[in-house]
Length: 326
Image (tube, rainbow, N blue to C red; front, side, top):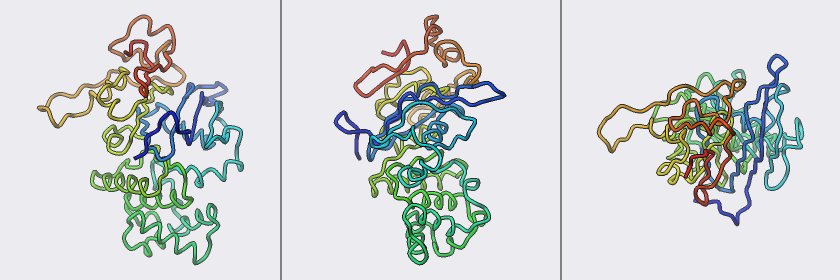
């Protein structure tokens, strides 16, 4: 497993990424200066509650937020600027260099086209394969994602397949362009535990075989722990903590991360009541002063409301955005 270090150039670098949506003529910010690096071959987990900006970050990178979104900041892929591109200029990047598995395969797949046609369309777009060659490669990809009877799946419509099979078909389409980076947005949502484990094992196997980088978006810390080497925690459009997986799980520095981990059951201890965090993620247009987590934080002090905390190093690879982090 590859580990990023100071001598390795980032595959993807995001700096000061900001997103605001036009709502009734008012610009409502939802991302507040996200900084993020992902390195070649690395698996990065991105966690946080719903509405914290995990998916919006990647949709902004790929230019998929629509005309009502105002996006600023810098994004570089192997040193090449993506933030200066838009529309058709980003087409060679989407799917080919950065592929994304969306959260709900049943809505991401075209319900009136067969799986094979959709998969071969990706192959034609990203690798110029058509006809017999495209069909053969489509069959190989479906076999690769462990779909039984791949030939029959090629001719099937999405609604005739199970959720797990549709998710595997989505992974096959994401792999069609042989991407350098795969972004998986909640890839196991609504799947039962057995199928979830199979999908996660498949992603790990594909990553090891191909050497591609993986960004896994999830609110499930168990999923992140099983698959990722490094973890980035987001809250209300901010990155509040990032660290190697083991370091973050053993020594969480931000009160929000501590709260997430405290809510997990521990199978090695006697059953006890799980802890929960009071309140909820603030609405984008109603952010509190200073630290966005302040109203929910058990360690809140008056100084927390004075300034938005910036990330600072508590270890060589462990950064926390909290004025009380040690």
